[in-house]
Length: 173
Image: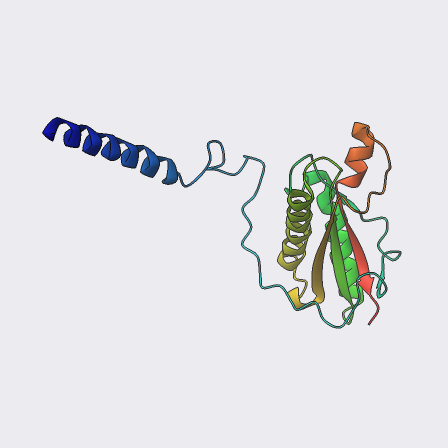
């Protein structure tokens, strides 16, 4: 009887140790550090969405030449794209009463949820760069469309590259 009780106790102790060690992992392997090219952003507080409708009250034509493109699976702003953001800041300084909407986009690869998050991180990265250039954070709104609004319909790397972007729209209200 004592031997059976000991075996049962030993079994449950072993099971408890195995189950608790599985539940203690804080980060999945490979996710402990951001990728080397990714910058960790400390975001300034986002303004409220305000009284505008992103589908009807935003005009993308004034800054249509300043689309910022990103590498695959990245929200890090490539050095080659920073000049476009500086042009947006110059435009904002010339139009101080204007607010903008930064719309983040992704290519079709990845889940809907992942791409929404990546699009938002891209828009916030551009926002923080603009804030660093002296643009008031209250004038910069963000939104993510994920993979819902591709600019290039196709399945080539060139199509994917055109869809990984942040577009800047002028809020008309």
